[in-house]
Amino acid sequence: MRTTIASKILGTAVALIALMALASSLSFYMADEVGFRIDRLSTEYIPAYGQLAHANVVSLEQALALRRLLLAARMASPNQDEITALHGSFDAKGAEFREALGTARSHINTEIDSGNAFADPIELARIDARIGALIDDDQRHYTDEVTRLLKSIGTPDSDVFASESPRVEALRDEINRHLEGLRGDLYRVVRDAAQATRKSQTRVVVIGAILTALAAALGLVVSALISGGLVRPLRRLLEGTRAVESGRLEVNVPVRSRDEVGRLTEAFNRMTEQLRVKERIRETFGKYIDPRVVEGLIDRPMLTQGEGQRRMMTVLFCDMKGFTAMSEGMTPQGLVKVMNRYLTTMSEPIRDHRGVIDKYVGDAIMAYWGPPFTDDSEQAGLACLAALDMLERLEPLHSEVMELLGMRTGLPSIDMRIGIATGDALVGNIGSDFMMSYTVMGDTVNFASRLESANKVYNNRILISGTTAVAAASYVETREIDRVVVSGTTEPHRIFEVMSRKSGLTPAQAALRQRFGEGLEAYRAMDWDAARAAFLDCLRIVPGDGPSAALLRRIEILEATPPADGWDGTWVMNHK
Image (tube, rainbow, N blue to C red):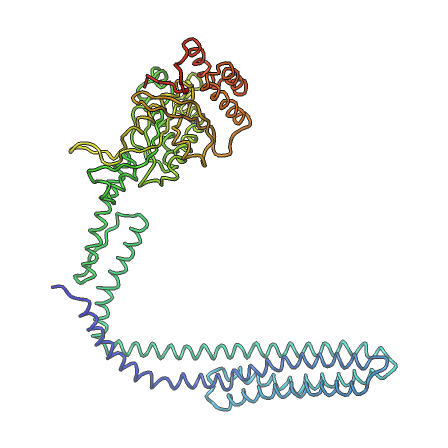
């Protein structure tokens, strides 16, 4: 039979009513003692301590008044009226000092004489005696010495003043030390009295709790049921929720009750089991499909719809240069190590710049940027930055591969080619009823692949489409390389090289871009001599510049076989 929290609460309420009745009667009975203690603290102990503190302040004020009196009396032409006033102030402070001590002593004597003192009577009597000594002995002695000092001012013997003045100061310091000691002792008495009051109050609570426990056994039983059946399960459930929040999905909360909390715990365990299944799916398929695609397929059902969508996307293809020649001299195990290291290193910049890796084809990588993973305004720029990062990792990768294979020399340099295109593409789940792939398709994908291959023609590393260059203008520096018609298309496209990050051109790169642009303009105007001169200058600025050398070779071909009238500089590429 399932119990409910409501029935437990009702039982607890009944028990608490009985407990409250007993506790109330006990509280009325014992509250008088606590009230008496608080009354004594407020009417005797604390006022006594306050008067001692006041006496301490007045003592300092009297010392200040004495210094002013001595200063006025020792002037060359003393003002008798001023001296009289200062002397009166000194005497008044002395009277106020004795009055404060007397008031404090009166409070202490009242507490001792009452016979109900809950502080130590012996300690109170000792403090009373010390106050009396301070009034009768120390203060009187101090007053006598001050009188002697004042009389010495009018005598011609200055040695009397010089000897009496330090003695008066020492007596005042002694009085202040005694007074501070009294304050400290009385403070301890007040503190102990306050602690005794608190203990008395605690004792009232404890006794009330004990009597309540004895008188309300049923209430305690119901409270135990509530504590065991509600609070502890809720605490375990809360701990389990925190564990899941921190990523520990293996948590399983034991079900110890059959009420609503128990049913909630069962639902929580079913939820964590489903989360573990989803996490295993993410961990497993995240090694084969980009984790963001996996997450989208699991958490966003609209990505799994059969129909695709046309979106503006940026696609990147990259390929290792000379992979076939390098792989011929390796064992299968060594080749796998090298490829895994290469693909891991080159995939990191793509992931760092929020790209989605679509597939690996041998040593080639296909990746894309665009909705719903990247905004339209930044997809081209992120792809170009990822390409630059990939090139920066080539040299460290070469050292890693040599260390991985245990080689010091003999490993060919690792280089790569990258093509990037931005344009309209079909995005969605594409495949058969047995296996699907969330990918991109269309002319933009083919164009990016052709650009990657076109690097061979221009002996270049990164070529991008004109649309990509415009969209990434705020991210990278580019130079126009050519206008081409790639294999499989009929429309000419302007292609560009990514030279550096924005505002990152070296002086040589800036001069190369300027002179290459001039040569390209002359080339398209069929001014072969001016174009040749410009491209030769480019090779002097940057020896080995691939695009300049490629266009110089092409000029020789065009001079031998001139293009038709109306030629606009477009070059047709018949190879893939």
